Amino acid sequence: MANQSKILVDIPADKGVHLKSAGQKGEKYVYKYTRYFRNASGEPRNEAKLIGKLDADSGRMIPNQNYYKMFNVTPETPDLSVWNYGLTYLIRKSGQDMGLLDCLQKTFGAQTEEILALASFIIRENQAMAMAMDSLDGFQERNLLPELDKPLTSQSCSRLFKSINSTKTHNFFKRWAKVTLNKDTVCYDITSVSSYSKYITDVENGYNRDHEDLPQLNLGMFCCETSNLPLYYIRYNGSITDKSNLSYVLPNASSVGIKNVKLILDGGFINEECFVHLNKLCKTFTIGIPSHLDISKEMIKENIDNITSFTNKLFWQEMFCVQKPTSIHGISGKLMLFFDPQSHLRLCSELSERIERLASELLALKQYPVSKLKEYSKYFIITKNDEDNGFTFRVDNDAVDQLRRVKGFFLLFSTDMTATPGDSLYYYRTKDSYEKLFDQIEVDLGGGRIRAHDPRATEGKVFVTFIALAIRAYMLGKLKKYLIANSSSLNNALNKLESVIVIKSKGEYSFAKALTKQQKEILEPFNAVEDIKSKVNSCLR
Image (cartoon, rainbow, N blue to C red; front, side, top):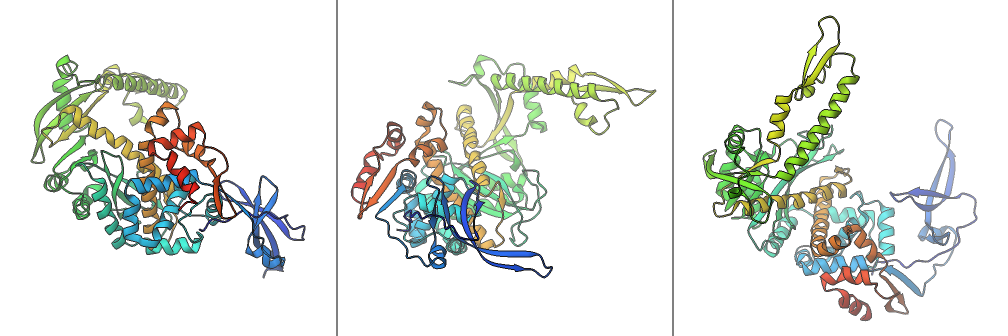
């Protein structure tokens, strides 16, 4: 077991002993100066060694090996150890119940426990995958990881990341797809991850979705509609467009078992080459159609006056749809035009607020707005004065009325001729929850940044983040009812599990206190209330 018991000693009252803050939480660490010297310019400098970490509750210090060596102190052996166990228990049980742990063990063997521990770290600490050593130490010190038989260090993490190669991940994804892909509807989308590295071959300049002046790599991810679990990802060069790469992505996905599926995509894949490959490699596909296309404008024009007829209303929803057989790029399917009255009202209100804000900007200007004329001209008729640099303006009512008129409309094209419009809309909207996975992966990679310079380590970091995302998505699914009923977030629920404390004394484990009502409510969807009790009572075996 790699968890460290907490030993507290007084901070040495010795010359050169001082505190430094580190990490995102500003935790304090104790250092001792070991050398004083002047540099080549004659400026005073010093060197120091870390001797421990400040325990905020007691004001004392948790010592490390440097402390024992420098102060010639014999390490103590505590007879009592205390850990948090609720979170790490539930993450491991989730991985086991969803079949993920078995796939990891068959692929990575003994490395599985390190991968699971790091995934737990990401889920709980929401830390960047830079894996700061102080944060990892603190996480392992606080949380019980009974299956991990080694400490997590920056060196061991680096070795682990570099060992996670494409062969291993490919074998994992083949196993994972068999476990997860119970039904045949799959979503696919792409995000860009920016990087400061100059040494990762996939990192190149291209269209940056976060509008940053940084090179990037692209991540394309498949997600299972029925479970909202991530299935598979593929990395590719940041300069390659999504459309260009789809013909390579689909065969790669097919090689791990994601084939003959119903695929859901956004409107970024509308070109002839994409349609040919989608039609060839997918059972059916459904794709969003941008409203600025001629085919969209014509469909809206034909139906704008009659779409709200009750005949077009979707069952159980206050939405309307008309559809017609259509071919796009030679692929036969159906074009569906949807109208959402609630969305129409909301978007019209937002448009009014925007026009009022821009009108206030124009009133404050003293000169003709050359630099922003294109933006203002969407909503206003602006006339430049002949005698000076001033201008007059008024709302272009016809243009605004036309913009308001088409708010709330959106279109889908699908080759699934048996699905109802309601079914197609439901499957397409699952992309909303699926795209939240991208939000999480960007957070877990340090705000969408990769700071590693070794491409082998980057591959491992992305994979471990994927494992964390899969477990997190599973827990979200299980806790959905609880979170809605309690107006809570997943992080808040995990906070409540933090106080599930386990004590080890004389080789025996026990709870520090009984499970609370809320802790039981969180554990219940996983059938874990009695299971966690039995594990502790049987000394975690």
